[in-house]
Image 1: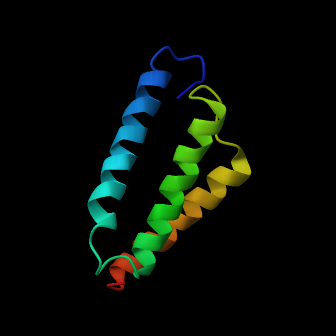
Image 2: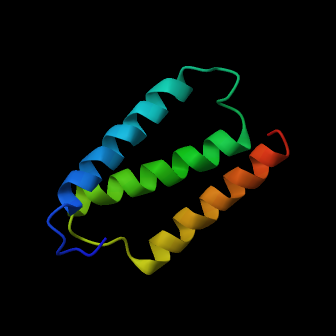
Length: 84
């Protein structure tokens, strides 16, 4: 979304709420805590959420951070395909 879009703050709020729900749901599952897929997704979610907490909903995620987040998501997807 463009940072000047009037809906960006609402979209970030929904993103953070969804992220918090995901973490709350899966963090309780002891069997998942040691899995690579959980670790990488948790790290990506934490990076996105932390960015918006620190800088607010209108500041775009910097390219370097965005690349790292996307890499973590891709690694998590690969781990899930391998059953990890």
